[in-house]
Image 1 (cartoon, one colour):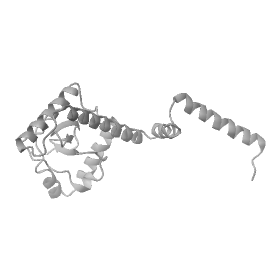
Image 2: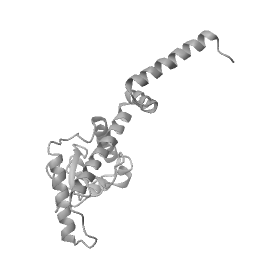
Image 3: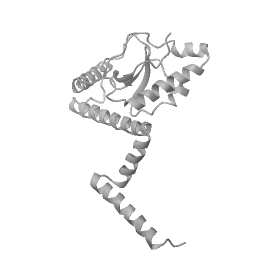
Image 4: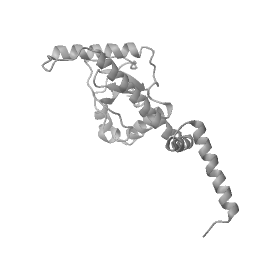
Length: 201
């Protein structure tokens, strides 16, 4: 059914106003609509911000890697370890001011805590104990610190891992004491963490 001229005029003015707002913000229509969705859904906005921050970190790691001397195709284990340490040192220097939460926005940190706590709450005590058996029962982790060589790299239970936000390009979730760290698998350094995700033992 054809709309009355007055209704058509109101709709046209509304669409024009929306277009002007988009142009004033100097963003594309898709970005504008996502921003509107993010404003109504802080968790969705936090997840988007989380992925953006991780991508910035990966670009930094790639840039630091390019500055290092290229490895030969027949590099020894000793040379590979030295390069890993050199890359880790470069990243530490570039992120020397880094602090908890720089990569994990608050809404995502809250989601990780809730997801882990809910998972452990419903686990059988014996299964819970087994899942935490190899977790280093140590002090709070530190940004840019190397994961302890003498500590087991305890895996996060697959079902729990599937509920956590995805991590790209060899970034890994690991339990560390009562915290959940994001470990850079290429350098073995902790790049961010969330505290109090594991129940007291």
